[in-house]
Image (cartoon, rainbow, N blue to C red; front, side, top):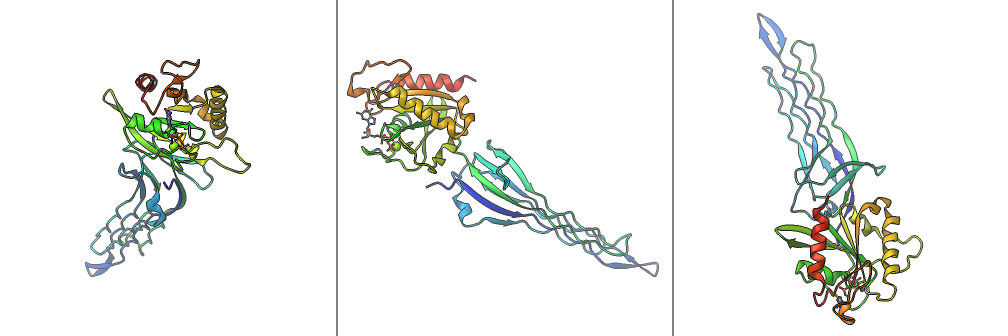
Length: 303
Ligand SMILES: Nc1nc2c(ncn2[C@@H]2O[C@H](COP(=O)(O)OP(=O)(O)OP(=O)(O)O)[C@@H](O)[C@H]2O)c(=O)[nH]1
Ligand SMILES: [Mg+2]
């Protein structure tokens, strides 16, 4: 199971205190303490080898190093190094009110979350040395949204995972019973020298009881194209529209995504089966898959 939501507590480093020391100069004691070093910042950065937030189950509190104290002969304390926290590509960083403060959606994205404290001045040219300032503290929420180009959605047992397998050449578990897939899983589809990520989702329930959530729909956030699959030859249109409605109800902004409707299992009827508004396929036999690939490629290549 992927961990996709976690709260972390951050504390940046305190600034180093100013040095307090004296040197004798023309028979007088003169202050010569150097300034302190800056406290360490905490910065989030993307690590492409991470695929969820499970590492944060073991550590949620992060404290950056304090700056070094200044010392005699005007020697400045060392600045503390920043503490980098690696997160998977696709992590949203939110404040505790749920507002997005950063979206780490590219491999080079970083986010300076808390700043280290300012250092104190040493006691040269002043009577005493200053203390360094405390570093910022902050609670943040990490909300991972799988970076994927395409998502496959539908009611139970319609052949979503079979389609993922057919496109990606993988062998995720397929079963002739509902709710075979219990968590989101993804594969890579390579076509014409490009790579696309495809997300397979757990099935939507035909009827939701009140209070029941389908939180995995949050992973459609980054998806450009949604494939709604049905195997209902009679009422397929109604079914895919019910799925679409559920998606848009979950997040009204999903309305702007591209939707394709797929009628699967046409091998149960015949190879040339056609129905308006649907791409007919057989994920099992590979029928219609080449045409589907071409349509997906076109849709993803257009802006
Ligand atoms: N005849 C036929 N059977 C198919 C086809 N695609 C999938 N199936 C079968 O339908 C059943 C369900 O397939 P899955 O791919 O697990 O369906 P799913 O939508 O991922 O199921 P859940 O994860 O439980 O929602 C399996 O027995 C598959 O072998 C197809 O094109 N033709
Ligand atoms: Mg499945």
